[in-house]
Length: 368
Image (cartoon, rainbow, N blue to C red):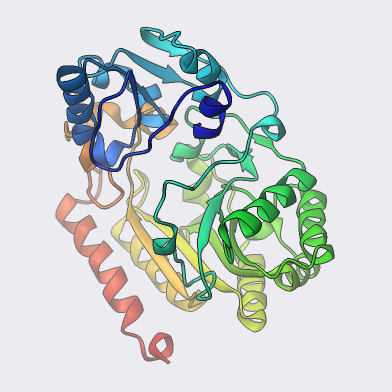
C-alpha cells in the first residue's frame, strides 16, 4: 500500500500501536486485536479529525463491527482504490473495491520504516533478516473451515516477477531469508520449478520457507527447491481422520504420500512444520487422540495444534453459527473454543490441546 500511495503523491507514515496527526488513517484489521483497532479509529477521529478506513479480511467480513469507529470499510483489496485515496477521494460506508486483476503490476512493498534487524526467523535462516513475501494470493482449494478463502480470489505472479522482488529485497535491505506466505506455493509445479531455477541461475544465496500440501510436492521438486534454498516447509496435516476432513470439504493427501514427503524433507535437512486442527464438529475425543498419535509418528520439527475456530465468512461459521456462544471476536483465536461441540466440552478440548503439546515435545525421540 505504501508504494502505491506514494506513487500517487501521498506522504505515508507507518505507526505501530500509536497515532499521529494525519488526514487519513488506514487500519489493517485482525480478528484477534479488533477491539484495540476500534479504539484506535475512534481516537484518530476525535483527536485529529482524521478520516479512518479499515481493510483486511475481518473488516471486510464483519464491517458493522467498525461502523462507529471508521468512515469506511474496504471489501476485497484496498490496493484497487489506493490511487483515489492518495488524491483525497475518501469513500464512506462499505466499499466493494474488487480484486487486483494482475498481481505482477503491483509495486514491491517498502520496508524502510520497519525495524528490520528485528525481523529474524531462524527456522528459515539464522544468518540475517528474513522478510515475508507473497508470490500468489488466495487458495485454489475449498476447505470449509479455512479463512484463506474469505475475501480473496486465487491468483499467481509470474516467476520472473517473483525473482525481481527477491533481488530487490536482497539489494535494498540485505535480506538473507524469505518466508513465502502463499497458502499453496507449489500448486503449479512448472511455476514452482521455474522460480527455483531462476534463483539458482542468478546465484542468489538466500534461504526460504514455503507453505503447501504434500500432494503438491514430489522428490524431484523437493531436491530442486532445496538446492535453491528451501529450508522450511509448512503443511496442513489437520487430522488423522481423512473421512472427517472430507466432510469439511478438505480432500486430504494420502498418509503414505504425506509420510514419504516428510521423510524426504528430513533427509534433505528441510524443517517441517505441521498444523493440526482439533475439535471439528464431527470430531471426537478418540479422534483427537488418534491425531495426536499420528503427529508423533510423523515427528516433524515443529507442530501447531489449534482448536477449531468457525471464522466469520467461512462455510464452517455458517453451519455452526446457531451453536456459537462466544460474543467477543477476539476469542476467535485458534486457542479458545467458541461453540458448543456435540461430543466434547470446552474444558475437554482445551485439555486435549495442552496434552497434545506437552506429550509431543517431551518424547525422548523428539528431544533427541
